[in-house]
Image (cartoon, rainbow, N blue to C red; front, side, top):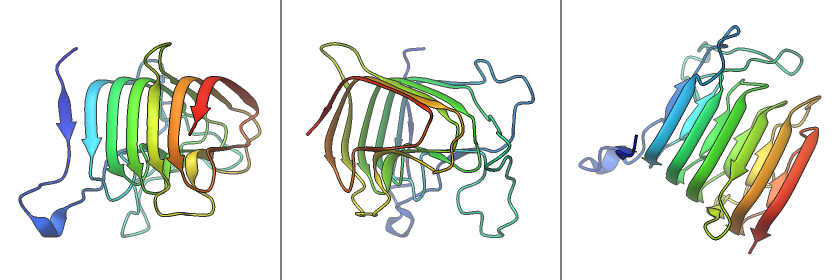
Length: 193
């Protein structure tokens, strides 16, 4: 699909300049392949992460759905995303309790990620890529200056998982560019400015 989809806050009401974002809240029980496919999508102005995997973002009741824990993965993916744009979000993608989720983003732009541009769960399998001559970009990550924040981070405690990054440019990431304990890390043609 080459049609563009935009998700943002109701700009007519200044009191509601943010919305919560999208949440995917349950394990797939073996049906992960190609479960979530997003292409040509822009997500803007979220109070929490644009996409949360594993639980709802800051469920006010505290009793919202969750799955998995540090010892039991809860793959709510696969997420396959291309031609994505995220602007003015807490994070483009964040774990809720989605340990072991597979996330692939190709040809993306993230700007103004207030906490981290990407905040992955333990054991996540993440692939972030652009192309030679047209890298994906992350600009102004962690504008809240969180000590734990940055461009790409993950929750500590991984016993598996991987991060592959190729042809990605990171501009103005506060605190750190990449901080993760995912087991396998491959970084190729990544520039930090």
